[in-house]
Length: 136
Image (cartoon, rainbow, N blue to C red; front, side):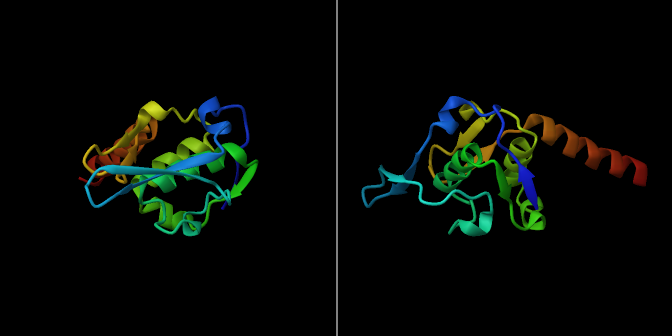
């Protein structure tokens, strides 16, 4: 699926971001932050080694969305089965602002993340409730 994404909806924090922070655990169990340049911009989860399952890849994904005018997002069926990625992809395709405050990172595991998209979540949960109600 190809989507148009380059609009002024992105906050400056993402559109000016040319690097990402890669957070890893070292042997002392303290976070180790390594800043590296982004070599390739992509919105296809298949282009990411961990398929966006870790925070550092999610941050690169958002930075990529701010840099691209159009993007191939890969197998949409795969994204549908990964709710947190689907919530993020919906915000990007709807051209919603990507506010860092609505990204949730686990304090005990910095590579575990979630993205809050209350509008999409309400529509999805409402749709599930409606289908359940209609079916009974």
